[in-house]
Amino acid sequence: AETPVTPPVAGSTEWWCGTQESRRRPREAGDQVDKSSARWTEVNPSQWPWEREALAFVREGLPDSDPYRAWANIEYIGDDGAINELDLLVVSPFGFFLVEIKSHPGIISGDQQKWNWIPPDGKRKSMDNPLLLAQRKAHRLGDVLFRQSAFKNRPRPRIEPVIFLSNEQLDCQLNPAGRINVYGRGLPPRRQGAPSLSNILDLFKNNLALEARRPGPVN
Image 1 (cartoon, rainbow, N blue to C red):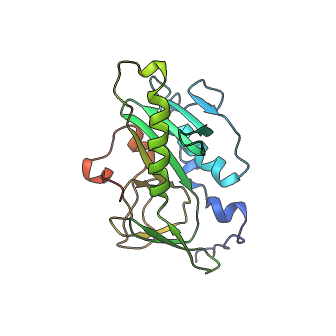
Image 2 (image 1 turned 60 degrees about the vertical axis):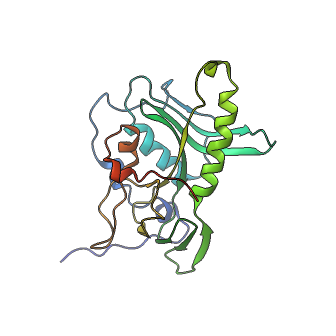
Image 3 (image 1 turned 120 degrees about the horizontal axis):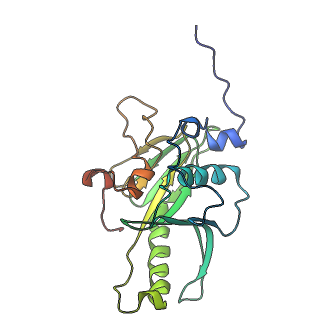
């Protein structure tokens, strides 16, 4: 008989981070970015263990080659004077990606406007689709970058906002519109017949089919 699995205590590190199975999967030597690498800049170290674990998953999966670069936990002031906080900005040969990390355990459902989260304790919470805010942050950041000397005589940079649902124990029940620009770790879905989330690392490496990327405007 299988040994029963004891569920993690609500609010604990294990509750937010999951089992960390994907971090235990071996990666090829020399194919990951070290934390001390110039390709990875963590401006403000995260105080949250689940966010640190999600950032480590991305960092260890990025190719250690040009032009890959990433900046974690950065802040910038937009043209409107507002201070914007970014979880992660990734530059790859295939574009700029503004990554909003969500480490919610439990069940996530909803559409392009509203999400519903049911954590393991069963207390349902409603929230705006985080892609809406990420889109606004990406537009503001594009304005700031376009004024820099590096973009002189160059087109305005297009920054693609994406959501990284990092918890391995998450049961994603978002409808197709709600899954636009939403990625996970590429793990099998928690329920039979449920949609799976593509690995966010494949997005940065352009390993996804066009239909898997589900590009489109944010309403």
